[in-house]
Image 1 (spheres, one colour):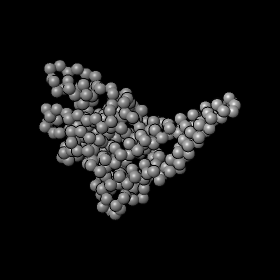
Image 2: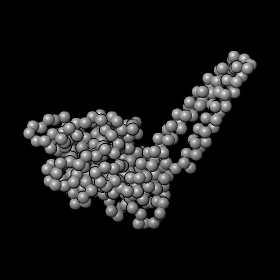
Image 3: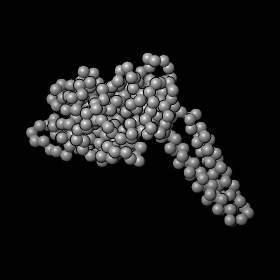
Image 4: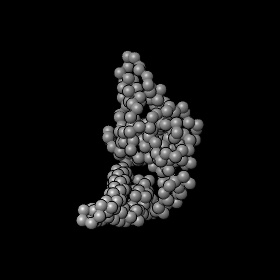
Length: 273
């Protein structure tokens, strides 16, 4: 892989995709990145430490419990220490399980997803400047129709009009009322998407979706543009993941605007975990 990650990336990029070669696709590059970032080998020391902590906690707690009942009450302190150590180990293991589940979901998107450009409708204002949060949710629009998705002006037009309906109650137009309800929803949910009414999109299939944006995937750690490269599972439902920009195929770059950002309204970062 020839591209390099920006300085804000917290995980180094693997040197090549799993298949290698100059003709690997962005999806293959993303899959290789996931294998590298989430590989158990990369974190084997943490796994070994967690298992050791769990065994130590159980052994210490059990042994101290036996001694407290058969020898001296002060051994109860060892029981408490063993419980605390085991509890900490279980907490770490829970985090590993969630990490494995996240890896599985993202690998599925990498296997089945299509490369699209998602256009930001609204996002937290914190994402427009450097910050400490690892990731924040945005609401975006995208399409699987290349002639629609590649039309940056039209997609930005749709995104702007959806954003304008946020916290509004249009009168007499059921489709706009429906879109306003979607745009105003304060809760975000992983992989949720809605097909916008065709009357609103001139017959094009355009989806409004919730997208978790990782600062590590953005140059400098914050949004510079409202057009984000993503992999999305085709269909009315499915996952969508933001692609790190440095993993894109340089021969077929996704259209990223260098124009100033349009007004982006604030959205409470709730619900995505």
